Image (tube, rainbow, N blue to C red; front, side, top):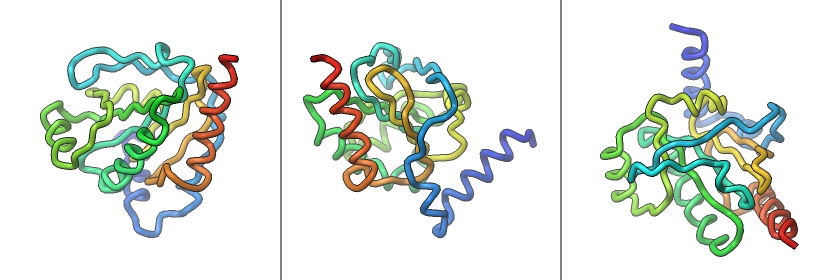
Length: 176
């Protein structure tokens, strides 16, 4: 098994353990340099490019339907999106290698209305170093990744909400 695949499987197993470290689920400042490219098709086949969302804060979440922590986190992301409606904020859920019918069935069953992009060959996940699922990144209005978090997060409270609101306020102030 290639080293990268083995490391990813270990990270995934760690995330699924009930006792996974709380520190693993804390927002971490991004220290990896430039924001990786992200241009993928949505479920209707239209390409969405992160560069076109400049001026907006973007929550980029890598997930899969088979990932229990991902499924548990989705309603929180939906509530955050609703809470910030009308503000310079967007959500991009990047599905990890699954087909459109499976994703659409999941969204219907869970009654979720969120924008989903398909990373069919998982190359974008690799470029972003999404070493396990769920993996979430906060991108500021200038298009720079500012934070990342590995593991399930409640995006409607605590440091996660504070970080998002701070970035959204910065985005709003930049236009003045």
